[in-house]
Image (tube, rainbow, N blue to C red; front, side, top):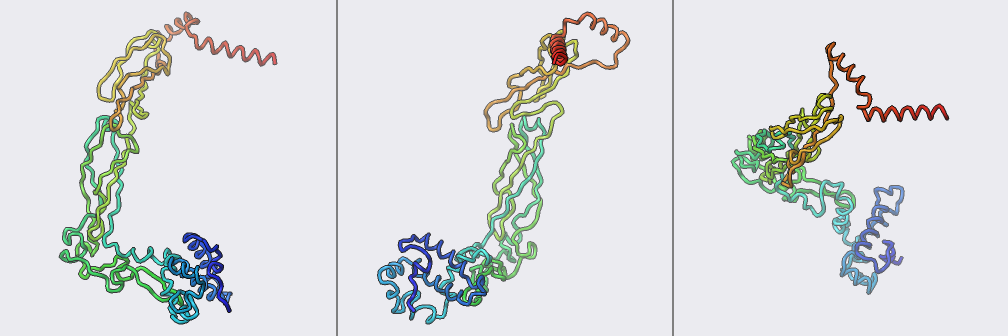
Length: 384
């Protein structure tokens, strides 16, 4: 029976690109794989036909020959699928298409493509995170903190190699340094992580007794950290090379310090601006005057209170806020007045307040306006 056209087998046009060929092949191979078609006795033959077609068309030289001469280009035994030079003669289907199976099933075999995963001798250490709380005053001025970080450091005994006396690891005899081993399963090859070296490609003959061959040990380190002025909650500081030590002499990871600024008893922060709520007596609010307020630098400023001030009135103190991180100026401080109602009045104070109330009917413009609106509302409801 005449062989099917390779392009027809893959379901693509003759001028298909390499990417289109690969995409069509992957689709067909997954569709016709014998493991997924146990009820189809022809699945294996169809699967081999698809692989035969792709093996020719993925190779630029073979493809050019096939485009010119068709199947006759390989009838002399030099091709990838003729009657005399194909699978029947060679009998090594898995070897011929091992790269194809790696491409299709590599994710399920414990490694990347081409066996490269096992060539990584050393492993970089993990990055570490440290949460550091500072006060608002420390965030304003900047501060140097000493922290203790539990981490893995290079073993001094073996100098990070993991081997007794600092000897270098040797090539794994099982995988010959590739980090992977191959096993024949049916008509294709399965590639798995080497069980002897766990993919490292090397083994330690005499493991260091201190670190058990890992090349690093657990230890708590003290570090001095410079916290710049202007930090906010969420600010991240990176200390390069201060993270976890790498395996078998690999590079050290980084340490990331995440800042949290504690709440303050007097000030609330919004970016570079500060807010301070200052209580004043109702007489000071009515008559006006001055009030002394604290500032974040530890000093004090006198603020003039206008006569007739109400609760919620805000006043601005320029450049009395927080510095911007990495420069960029200083924010402001906003003073918000809170008119305080006196409590625990004496008899004389009550008497004076009643007298004051009787004389102050025209001194409450906001209240007068409000109750006038209330009266209008009720009158409107009655007329509806």
